[in-house]
Length: 239
Image 1 (cartoon, rainbow, N blue to C red):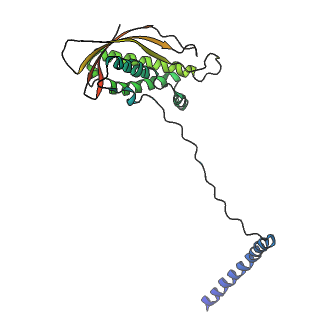
Image 2 (image 1 turned 120 degrees about the vertical axis):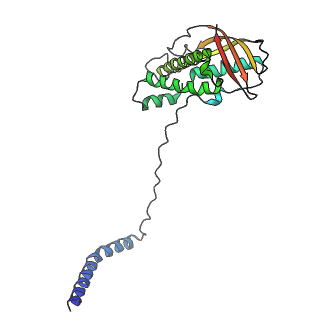
Image 3 (image 1 turned 90 degrees about the vertical axis):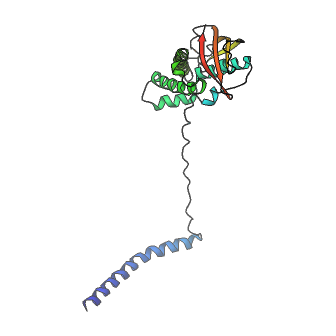
Protein backbone atom coordinates (compact mmCIF):
# COMPACT_ATOMS: atom_id res chain seq x y z
CA UNK A 1 0.00 0.00 0.00
CA UNK A 2 2.85 2.30 0.83
CA UNK A 3 4.60 1.59 -2.48
CA UNK A 4 1.37 2.21 -4.40
CA UNK A 5 0.99 5.65 -2.80
CA UNK A 6 4.67 6.47 -3.64
CA UNK A 7 4.12 5.55 -7.28
CA UNK A 8 1.06 7.77 -7.43
CA UNK A 9 2.97 10.73 -6.01
CA UNK A 10 5.86 10.25 -8.57
CA UNK A 11 3.38 10.05 -11.46
CA UNK A 12 1.62 13.17 -10.22
CA UNK A 13 4.90 15.11 -10.06
CA UNK A 14 5.86 13.94 -13.57
CA UNK A 15 2.48 15.10 -14.89
CA UNK A 16 2.90 18.50 -13.23
CA UNK A 17 6.38 18.88 -14.80
CA UNK A 18 5.00 18.04 -18.21
CA UNK A 19 2.22 20.57 -17.76
CA UNK A 20 4.69 23.21 -16.68
CA UNK A 21 6.79 22.71 -19.84
CA UNK A 22 3.78 22.53 -22.16
CA UNK A 23 3.31 26.33 -22.55
CA UNK A 24 6.99 26.73 -23.66
CA UNK A 25 6.66 23.97 -26.22
CA UNK A 26 3.37 25.42 -27.44
CA UNK A 27 4.85 28.93 -27.78
CA UNK A 28 7.77 27.58 -29.79
CA UNK A 29 5.44 25.68 -32.09
CA UNK A 30 3.21 28.74 -32.54
CA UNK A 31 6.19 30.93 -33.35
CA UNK A 32 7.28 28.59 -36.13
CA UNK A 33 3.77 28.37 -37.52
CA UNK A 34 3.16 32.14 -37.36
CA UNK A 35 6.27 32.92 -39.44
CA UNK A 36 5.63 30.12 -41.86
CA UNK A 37 9.32 29.26 -41.70
CA UNK A 38 11.05 26.18 -40.57
CA UNK A 39 13.33 26.42 -37.58
CA UNK A 40 16.78 27.49 -38.81
CA UNK A 41 19.33 24.79 -39.44
CA UNK A 42 22.43 24.95 -37.24
CA UNK A 43 25.28 26.74 -38.98
CA UNK A 44 28.50 24.81 -39.20
CA UNK A 45 31.59 26.90 -38.51
CA UNK A 46 35.08 25.90 -39.49
CA UNK A 47 37.91 27.27 -37.41
CA UNK A 48 41.03 28.06 -39.41
CA UNK A 49 44.28 27.57 -37.56
CA UNK A 50 46.84 30.32 -38.08
CA UNK A 51 49.71 29.50 -40.39
CA UNK A 52 52.70 28.22 -38.42
CA UNK A 53 55.86 30.28 -38.37
CA UNK A 54 58.21 29.11 -41.14
CA UNK A 55 60.99 26.87 -39.93
CA UNK A 56 64.38 28.50 -39.51
CA UNK A 57 66.44 28.21 -42.69
CA UNK A 58 70.11 27.77 -41.93
CA UNK A 59 72.82 25.86 -43.77
CA UNK A 60 71.50 22.92 -45.80
CA UNK A 61 73.75 19.95 -46.69
CA UNK A 62 72.83 19.91 -50.36
CA UNK A 63 74.38 23.37 -50.79
CA UNK A 64 77.82 21.99 -49.89
CA UNK A 65 77.98 18.83 -51.99
CA UNK A 66 80.62 19.21 -54.70
CA UNK A 67 80.18 16.52 -57.38
CA UNK A 68 83.21 14.55 -58.52
CA UNK A 69 84.66 14.84 -62.00
CA UNK A 70 84.41 18.62 -62.50
CA UNK A 71 87.02 20.48 -64.53
CA UNK A 72 89.32 22.79 -62.57
CA UNK A 73 87.48 26.02 -63.39
CA UNK A 74 84.10 24.61 -62.44
CA UNK A 75 85.48 22.95 -59.32
CA UNK A 76 87.11 26.14 -58.05
CA UNK A 77 84.01 28.18 -58.80
CA UNK A 78 81.67 25.68 -57.13
CA UNK A 79 83.74 25.75 -53.96
CA UNK A 80 84.51 29.48 -53.74
CA UNK A 81 81.51 31.25 -55.29
CA UNK A 82 79.16 28.45 -54.29
CA UNK A 83 79.93 26.66 -51.04
CA UNK A 84 82.07 29.30 -49.31
CA UNK A 85 79.77 32.19 -50.23
CA UNK A 86 76.74 30.17 -49.11
CA UNK A 87 78.49 29.46 -45.80
CA UNK A 88 79.23 33.13 -45.17
CA UNK A 89 75.55 34.04 -45.59
CA UNK A 90 73.86 30.91 -44.20
CA UNK A 91 70.93 31.87 -41.99
CA UNK A 92 70.74 35.43 -43.32
CA UNK A 93 67.06 35.47 -44.27
CA UNK A 94 63.69 36.47 -42.78
CA UNK A 95 63.47 33.32 -40.66
CA UNK A 96 66.39 34.69 -38.66
CA UNK A 97 64.17 37.55 -37.50
CA UNK A 98 61.57 35.05 -36.26
CA UNK A 99 64.24 33.12 -34.39
CA UNK A 100 65.61 36.27 -32.75
CA UNK A 101 62.12 37.37 -31.70
CA UNK A 102 61.34 33.95 -30.24
CA UNK A 103 64.54 33.90 -28.18
CA UNK A 104 65.14 35.36 -24.75
CA UNK A 105 68.75 35.98 -25.78
CA UNK A 106 70.29 38.97 -27.53
CA UNK A 107 70.69 39.17 -31.28
CA UNK A 108 74.43 38.58 -30.90
CA UNK A 109 73.88 35.37 -28.92
CA UNK A 110 71.36 34.05 -31.45
CA UNK A 111 73.57 34.72 -34.47
CA UNK A 112 76.48 33.01 -32.70
CA UNK A 113 74.26 29.96 -32.06
CA UNK A 114 73.21 29.90 -35.71
CA UNK A 115 76.81 30.14 -36.91
CA UNK A 116 77.82 27.23 -34.68
CA UNK A 117 74.97 25.11 -36.06
CA UNK A 118 75.85 26.05 -39.64
CA UNK A 119 79.48 25.06 -39.14
CA UNK A 120 78.47 21.52 -38.20
CA UNK A 121 76.40 21.16 -41.38
CA UNK A 122 79.13 22.56 -43.62
CA UNK A 123 82.11 20.62 -42.28
CA UNK A 124 80.17 17.35 -42.17
CA UNK A 125 79.40 17.76 -45.87
CA UNK A 126 82.34 19.64 -47.37
CA UNK A 127 85.30 18.40 -45.31
CA UNK A 128 86.92 14.99 -45.37
CA UNK A 129 86.02 12.69 -42.44
CA UNK A 130 88.58 13.08 -39.65
CA UNK A 131 89.16 16.74 -40.50
CA UNK A 132 89.53 17.51 -36.77
CA UNK A 133 93.09 16.18 -36.94
CA UNK A 134 94.09 18.43 -39.86
CA UNK A 135 95.30 21.82 -38.64
CA UNK A 136 94.44 23.77 -41.79
CA UNK A 137 90.85 22.50 -41.75
CA UNK A 138 90.44 23.17 -38.03
CA UNK A 139 91.58 26.75 -38.61
CA UNK A 140 89.39 27.11 -41.69
CA UNK A 141 86.33 25.77 -39.83
CA UNK A 142 86.84 28.31 -37.05
CA UNK A 143 87.34 31.15 -39.53
CA UNK A 144 84.27 30.13 -41.51
CA UNK A 145 82.14 30.13 -38.38
CA UNK A 146 83.37 33.60 -37.42
CA UNK A 147 82.77 34.96 -40.92
CA UNK A 148 79.25 33.52 -40.96
CA UNK A 149 78.41 34.95 -37.54
CA UNK A 150 79.63 38.44 -38.48
CA UNK A 151 77.82 38.41 -41.82
CA UNK A 152 74.43 37.35 -40.47
CA UNK A 153 74.77 39.67 -37.47
CA UNK A 154 75.13 42.55 -39.92
CA UNK A 155 72.26 41.13 -41.95
CA UNK A 156 70.03 41.21 -38.86
CA UNK A 157 71.17 44.77 -38.12
CA UNK A 158 70.33 46.06 -41.60
CA UNK A 159 67.53 43.94 -43.08
CA UNK A 160 64.63 45.22 -40.96
CA UNK A 161 65.77 48.67 -39.79
CA UNK A 162 63.43 51.25 -41.26
CA UNK A 163 64.97 54.10 -39.23
CA UNK A 164 68.13 54.04 -41.38
CA UNK A 165 67.34 55.20 -44.95
CA UNK A 166 70.46 53.56 -46.36
CA UNK A 167 69.32 50.09 -45.27
CA UNK A 168 67.35 49.14 -48.34
CA UNK A 169 68.66 45.56 -48.40
CA UNK A 170 70.06 43.24 -45.76
CA UNK A 171 73.84 42.90 -45.62
CA UNK A 172 75.40 40.21 -47.76
CA UNK A 173 78.99 39.23 -48.57
CA UNK A 174 80.34 37.08 -51.37
CA UNK A 175 83.47 35.94 -53.20
CA UNK A 176 84.12 36.11 -56.93
CA UNK A 177 86.57 33.88 -58.76
CA UNK A 178 89.13 35.70 -60.90
CA UNK A 179 91.24 32.76 -62.03
CA UNK A 180 91.61 29.02 -61.40
CA UNK A 181 94.55 26.74 -62.10
CA UNK A 182 95.18 23.13 -61.23
CA UNK A 183 98.67 22.05 -60.22
CA UNK A 184 100.33 18.67 -59.93
CA UNK A 185 101.05 18.04 -56.27
CA UNK A 186 103.35 15.18 -57.19
CA UNK A 187 101.86 12.54 -54.91
CA UNK A 188 100.49 10.52 -57.82
CA UNK A 189 97.10 10.02 -56.19
CA UNK A 190 94.49 10.24 -58.94
CA UNK A 191 91.72 10.97 -56.47
CA UNK A 192 93.55 13.98 -54.97
CA UNK A 193 93.69 17.37 -56.71
CA UNK A 194 95.26 20.74 -55.88
CA UNK A 195 93.44 23.87 -57.09
CA UNK A 196 94.65 27.47 -56.77
CA UNK A 197 91.84 30.02 -56.89
CA UNK A 198 92.39 33.77 -57.18
CA UNK A 199 89.38 35.58 -55.73
CA UNK A 200 88.02 38.97 -54.71
CA UNK A 201 85.75 39.80 -51.76
CA UNK A 202 82.57 41.85 -52.13
CA UNK A 203 79.65 43.14 -50.03
CA UNK A 204 76.48 45.06 -50.86
CA UNK A 205 77.47 48.09 -48.78
CA UNK A 206 75.88 50.40 -51.36
CA UNK A 207 72.52 49.20 -50.00
CA UNK A 208 73.13 49.28 -46.23
CA UNK A 209 75.45 50.49 -43.49
CA UNK A 210 77.34 47.20 -43.25
CA UNK A 211 81.15 47.04 -43.41
CA UNK A 212 83.40 46.62 -46.41
CA UNK A 213 85.34 43.31 -46.58
CA UNK A 214 88.47 43.33 -44.42
CA UNK A 215 90.62 42.22 -47.36
CA UNK A 216 90.18 42.81 -51.07
CA UNK A 217 90.97 39.25 -52.03
CA UNK A 218 93.82 36.83 -52.52
CA UNK A 219 94.51 33.21 -53.46
CA UNK A 220 93.12 30.04 -51.90
CA UNK A 221 94.98 26.77 -52.18
CA UNK A 222 92.48 23.92 -52.07
CA UNK A 223 93.28 20.23 -51.84
CA UNK A 224 90.32 18.00 -52.61
CA UNK A 225 89.82 14.26 -52.72
CA UNK A 226 87.07 12.29 -54.42
CA UNK A 227 85.22 9.19 -53.35
CA UNK A 228 83.95 8.79 -56.90
CA UNK A 229 80.77 10.71 -56.20
CA UNK A 230 81.73 13.80 -54.22
CA UNK A 231 84.77 16.04 -53.75
CA UNK A 232 85.79 16.92 -50.19
CA UNK A 233 88.35 19.34 -48.82
CA UNK A 234 91.51 17.90 -47.29
CA UNK A 235 93.52 21.14 -47.02
CA UNK A 236 92.84 24.90 -47.28
CA UNK A 237 95.29 27.79 -47.18
CA UNK A 238 94.69 31.49 -47.81
CA UNK A 239 97.51 33.69 -49.17
